[in-house]
Image (cartoon, rainbow, N blue to C red; front, top):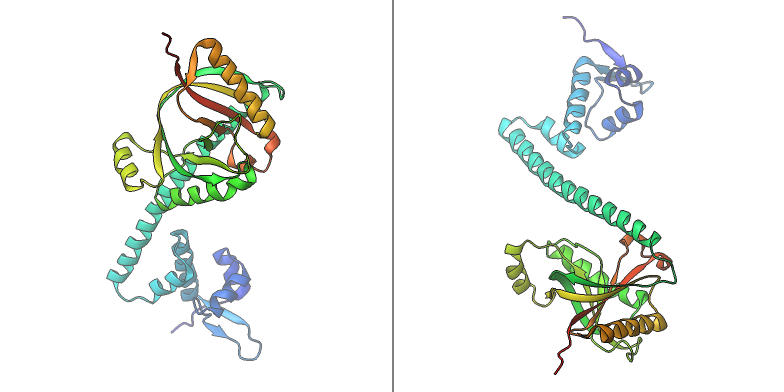
Length: 294
């Protein structure tokens, strides 16, 4: 019987298009052992069967099997076991595809938001405020209300907890974060204020009622309606907040409007820009209705 041809580790690596280090590692973990090892020199020699073994490993890696799983597959003598492992890997792959599609959708949305913010920021001088009357649709938000200081640093924990809830509930954040002030912006204490931090979430209409009931402590809707808004650049502070709110009150009085709910501060900024407050674009929103006249 003809003796099987043997290849040095370098030759085997070249034939199989992988590194010598990889073959040594496969030997170390008992995944692919060389056909022969010279007891004096320690040189490894690979047979044609060994090369086939290596190609099987490479094929399984293309299917995203781990080395541990590949060892189990190769060692299995049962087609049913191999089939079961293939089915499990297929299910894992489909799940990853769904997750990747969601990531791709989120990235597409974030890119669109960044493009919008880039254009918006270039159109607003740092010293200017853009005042508009807008209709806003109903917004579903994850929210958390309580007394605390306002500002970026004091808000980090609150918004982090909300993002954690959204993830745990299997929901998807959809829009810019905001703060609702349940006190008068002209007189409130920025170090101790009744505020509500909110993150918009995406829910289909049929899912809305069930989710809001299930997560009543966290989910609610902000009513649709007319809002007087002020758009400006820079992170809010005590003076700017009061000045801009007073400007909106003056506009409301001149136009025959009155506030119909608490003021909302929405931060038109991507999460990646949160460490650059000088690039913030903020929209102060006050729900309004026509003032009744006798």
